[in-house]
Image (tube, rainbow over all chains, first blue to last red; front, side, top):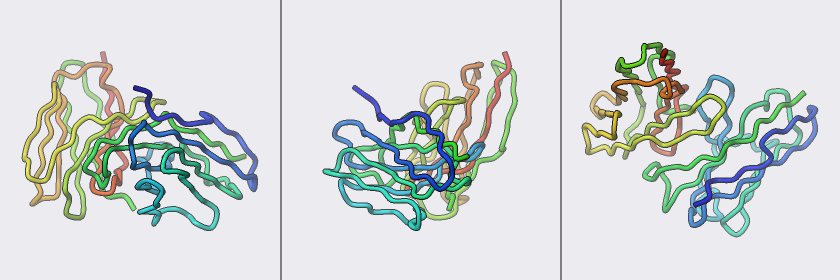
Length: 116
Length: 106
């Protein structure tokens, strides 16, 4: 079974530029999460989807971050414009069937973003 | 905001010794999960303990849960160098703590 796929694995951009991350969850997993992990810290939940619906986006900085999950499968996380403080690893995870902390999450390898 | 908080922040032991790390949380939970993250790699689920369970085992891992104290502990017995990693607890809505960095010396 294929795991959670993320791309790109690494991204270097200059501040004020836009950037997008893509995630393909495990087939059949209807819950998808995006996290941001700073060096030496635990993952910080940004947004959680149940199918196409964003059910928890309370931690998403909505002035510059946006996310979408078309057709309840793949998801894209976008930052526009990027700031120096956005440098981090962005992790995607998925779970089945209903999330809410009752099911095992499977994490992708992450995208390491460096903002110069 | 972070939900789980791990303690200690860092732990260094010799191979073969046991390692214990703790997690405290703030609100009521349905369950608590422990994850491991090796250097430069993604997070891997280790074990889930439900709120009505007090102890759970998986191989060399033993997890306890005390809901009255809002705390959990993860014990790794007979540690190996390959156990070197960061360990995180995660609670309801999957909020993680800062983790315990475990180093197992050969």
